[in-house]
Amino acid sequence: MQKTIIRLRARPSGLPQPTDWEVREEAVAPPGDGEVLVAVRYVSVSPSLRSQMEAGGAYLPPLQLGDTPRARAVGEVLESRSSAFAPGDHIEGLLGVQSHFTGPAAGLMKVDPHLAPLPRYLGVLGMTGFTAYFGLLDIGRPQPGETVVVSAAAGAVGGVAGQIARLKGCRVVGIAGGAEKCAHVVDDLGFDACIDYREGSIGERLVELAPKGVDVFFDNVGGAVLDEVLLHLAFKARVPLCGGVAHYNDVGRIGIRNHLKLLETRGRMEGFSVYDYGARFLEARDALADWLADGSIVAREHVEDGLERFPEALRLLFGGAQVGKLMVKV
Ligand code: NAP
Image (spheres, rainbow, N blue to C red):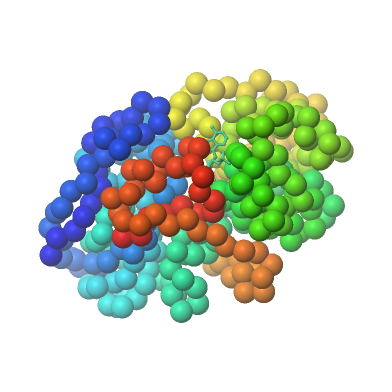
């Protein structure tokens, strides 16, 4: 049997190009002891894949030329030589950008396509939702009545983080690029307001929308957006540092200038990784599934058709029109 696999051909300079990748047809390896063979159905496309393309200095270990990206994906077990899974089971894990995965069963999570469609396990019911849940609740610790600001609010993690903040009784302001994305953030996700950072000044809008200051800033973007919001922090503000997508194509070159605002406000900025919370993933999945089931939050996925769309899909994360969790369908 043959599989399609996407491998890194060249390290990018700036925005990744389709020519940085190679699409190959290769033989599928049979599973060894403790391994499974999986038919991959959907592959997550996330900003961290851009970080992996760097030779060093990124927050994730670099890919070597010729590697397939360490992308999360969902798929169906075709063959199993592990007692953990049987053919027909559906699983989620780091399967790579390929149509078939052969590898260790350890680290794969069983998912139930009867409870939710498979793409949802890469979105709200997967690492995306878990990142929003732990970053907001454990690091941001929002209290009812507080003002929470979320950057990349129409994106996968940001959209969930803002919806959870709303459920916790906060006033929620999103920041997103473009009128269409802002309309989605307010009309579909239920944020109180959204600032289009491509139109006008974030600072001026925050004076109007957060007159008592920003209690929690859930930041996915970094760069100029973070710098501006820092100026508007409230006393004892919390800034969960989820990511810095504005930096990923320009590693190490964008600094912030307004960090002393944290001193002035006795604020706290704290980075986190969703993988710190592995022991509590099921807690997050249960809570998010309950909120989805009773309509308290909504899920949105953007699916590009075909594994070979992966190189173009990755580029969408840096200024594209997609909303919600981005993925490719195999
Ligand atoms: P996403 O938000 O769905 O997509 C990225 C969004 O970033 C884009 O849609 C774009 O939205 C915005 N963006 C891109 N370039 C920008 C720029 N120069 N300035 C401002 N905004 C820009 O992606 P995601 O998968 O949910 O990831 C969001 C963040 O979470 C990323 O930083 C990612 O690395 C991080 N993350 C962290 C963890 C963790 O454990 N800490 C886990 C998963 C993800 P606009 O069009 O609105 O600009």
